Amino acid sequence: MLRLRHSEAQALALTLRNAGAGTAAAANPAHWTAALELPLSTEPRRCHNVIARLPGRGHGAALLLCAHFDHVGDDPGGARFPGAFDNASGVALLLALARTLAHERRQLAAPELPFDIVFAALTGEESGLWGAQQLRQQPPGPIGAVVNLDSFGLRGAPLAVRTGHARRGDRFAEWAAERLQRRGLQVQWVDGRDDSAVFRQAGWPTLGLGQQPLEPGTNPMHTPDDTPDRLDPDVLQRMHDAVLDLIHEFAAFAAMPPPQGETP
Image (cartoon, rainbow, N blue to C red; front, side):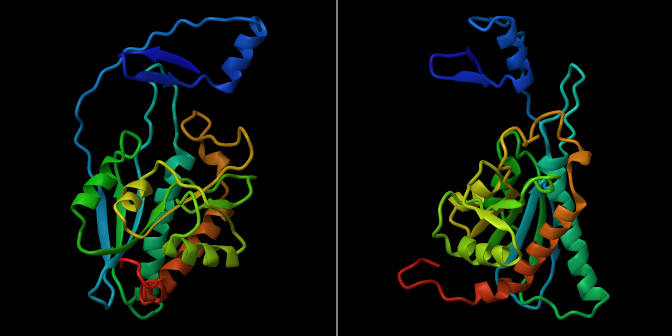
């Protein structure tokens, strides 16, 4: 890792990819140097969340399903960062779930859910969780719980799903983890610096769901290797079905009284 100090209190940390580090080490195992040109600029950009609501028959708090649709962007030098895993996959799941739930309502004459569902495609996650912060500050009505979808579908990887919590004990996460495990999914108690952190820190019941790469070097996130061919449609389908189950059963969780002494 290279560090560029730009003030007395802060440092820019740049990660050197494995291939580059190996080449440099082989050329001079004892010592090597690198020259770096890094022009930086900042400017404000207007960006937007995209929000839709599927009404239910209840009038209480809604279930919020969200996924960020921004990515790190392409390099000015020409390198492309496709962002298939992070987070086109999460947006695809969000849209597929919206389509399935609408189909159930219109085509299958399924009963209305006893709560509204708010679908939110969030912006500005990569640059500071801006979309999530805006939605937390100005929610589209009362929110009972949040399910954030961030990075799924890696081909050839064990389907380990993080909960968005570093440790056990959260009532909503425990409830969801039990149901995910019933579907044969491996649950990892791992938090993240994604949009779920904004809602979790605000005290909202929150799941930060995402596929947790277990093998070293298998995570293509924020690299040019994050391409659609790395994704497995069957894995995405399994996650769609698992989250759909959570949605269908959410009314049971919402009706559960909080443990004695816990603030609702």
